[in-house]
Image (tube, rainbow, N blue to C red; front, side, top):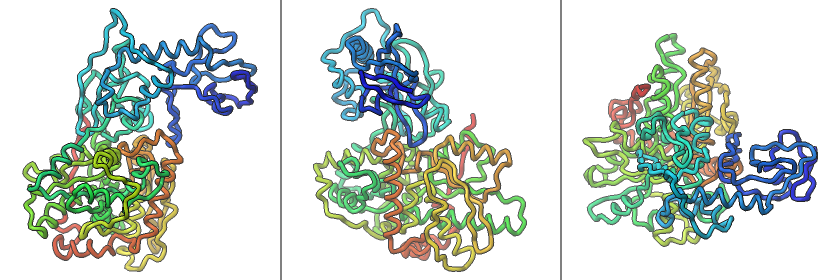
Length: 583
């Protein structure tokens, strides 16, 4: 069919919106609530903000271009005086009920509402007489801050939480100026099924949803001469941090990141990949123990074993699958394994008291802030990991420290907890945890050397993937899912007896950690996630050691401290248990 947009004829297919048709001929229609989350195959288009309205010949009312389908012969005007006036009026109404604290708002510089105000030429903010204005209290969870006075009802967070992640923590409540997206009965997030995955934060166009900022606490620790401050960096951070400094998505900045952290004054800079290698030793040993008993005919063995590295996923199954709490691996996440070893093994080597060591982690994930505050990861109230900073927070800290990131020469991690393998690196993307586990489990199970390191059948960005890996005659069925909505499908299928998996990897965020809620804003762009995904495997391929059990420093930790995988000390420091949160 053919439509005319601003006197230009364009041919479009059926079910094409006016917004998409305009894009085809280079016409950019402003919008706020609309967001194309192509990385997860979903468009948020509630047509709620009315910024994207256009004039259609023959229609009395203006039409939202994001939700109006083209019809043959349609004549559309996108920037008439009537349209411009309507957009400006709508935006002025939004701003009239919006807090005026842009100077100190954590979203300043990345606020789409602010950008739209500049684009539409708003120069003053009018008040609305006799209107009931919103006055919501601030709600802070361990990971996420909600300032509902800044909510513009775009409903992106509701889509991310309820449709893509199927968590169900957020819903539209009230009408008019009091309308917001909030938990049911206007509860705090801590009283809901929120997993703290941060995908709501990743799509929020304003400062209504932001992460809990720990940068000032870290600066205080660095300035305290009585504290030894160590930092660990997660694998996905190195594949995305460069974007904050104008680099192409997928640029690996491992060496520059280490150099920046050392320049800031951290006493030791380590790699969470070391913790990932440790996780494989424990999680792999647990899997081999279960699969061996299963093959011997033990009917009580709990299979499939589920990976437990993702704290948002752990929170999700504690809320939704309390009948399956004995199925996931009891291995802690790499972040928490690292913290436990740092404050015992490393502290002892350095002659430092536990309470005088501060462990900071740089994570792509907002749920990591929640995870390090869980009581089971503390000793006498002292957490194994003190503070978790997001990738965005690290970028802010680098700028605040007046460091020219792009000009930094590469630096190396410190040892003994900076040495890692390619297996540890690939934890940063979907499919990586299970591939790392296979590399080690194959050799320990068969007693033979694994010649083929790369398991391409475990890789990819499809939401759910299944495959079978041959362990020298023993077929191991594997399931992989990223995004909690896909995890729910997989777990519901297991409950219904539809699948016969031996192991399942699940990550909460799109693409795994590379798409975490604390990463640089990617706005659902699949090209950015793909570039980060490929960068992770590039670093893996460059590593001289690519199997966790061959890491010499991991071997040394077991020889000097832990004994062997699944030992009593390993269970005490590196394993955990789960809680029924179904109520």
